[in-house]
View 1 (tube, helix red, strand yellow):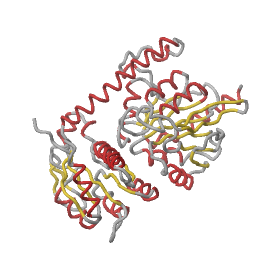
View 2 (spheres, rainbow, N blue to C red; view 1 turned 90 degrees about the vertical axis):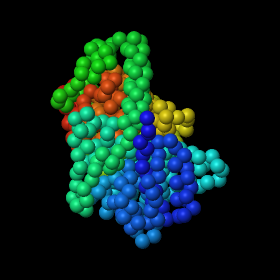
View 3 (cartoon, rainbow, N blue to C red; view 1 turned 30 degrees about the horizontal axis):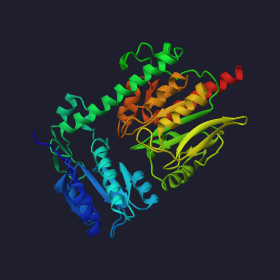
View 4 (tube, rainbow, N blue to C red; view 1 turned 90 degrees about the horizontal axis):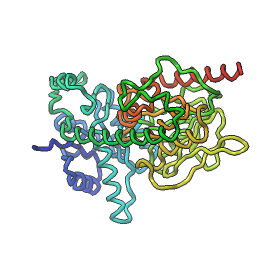
Length: 426
């Protein structure tokens, strides 16, 4: 059976770097180089003729930079784009303009540096190929009826060019099925972990004992759950698509809202710039995590790249530790590390939120938070760029309430008010 590969358009003005990318990417059995473009104008022409599945985009280019290219492309003809940039500010601008993800352009000192960069780029290309971009639905998440609809030819409103979506940005069913099997394996492993935890602590088990691994039996909440105690902090985890999703959640929180701790999968050097950007849009104060930061109302703390963030407590209250360590659940910083510490140290006065992202980081930790009495929220399928981390969390019973992205901020504020009212009555 022939493998239908991911067709990639490489956009880069550097002949040397473009050649390295093309030769490296085409070594992967699931990637095919559809073509290349030497600048943004060339890319616009090539997109219409080549119909790639994914675009890799350099930001620093002559004539029209990658950011301006995205701003013109995405509103009228959205494609999954992975940006390659050496500058944090450019990468963040690209994400804001609609790119799915970014990879830091390497400073190559050894062959290993280039190999690591290529591995990361290939991984993110594969994730981008199943991402939800605009009205484009990832095939991995479609029912057969929906897939049948997408076999019909549609028309681009901006160009009037008819599209055969059977050929347009498709990825092989075989590859989709492999990804699904991998996610199912993660779910099975996490369910075994859940059963082990339950056997050690039968108390919270009553809340989810009907689950038996079937999401239809997992107790959910229709309205805002009543707080058991005053809200102390909110812990948020995200990956692919998370930078903009996090902004939508936190920018509407009031200035005196309880502390928010955030783990977004992002490399060192980028999280500080991201925190500064969030700070310009939020009523709360936003900063990159430093070891020993106190957990106080009005603060949003972003885990630093390459550092795990944990919650600890002393006589003065709660604070965070920021420490280097091995990857957990495939990442550093890891959402699971944060969520596990919140469950252990803070308990039912916290809320856990899992947002868009590939993989399963955060699912086990969110389940542990729910079993500790925390209110847990997951982003729904329709609003996710990649419905991976929230899907695994939902399927194992870690998510108490699933919501569209646009509703999560208001849900947190409502929950905070119920917790404040409860505290006043006591």
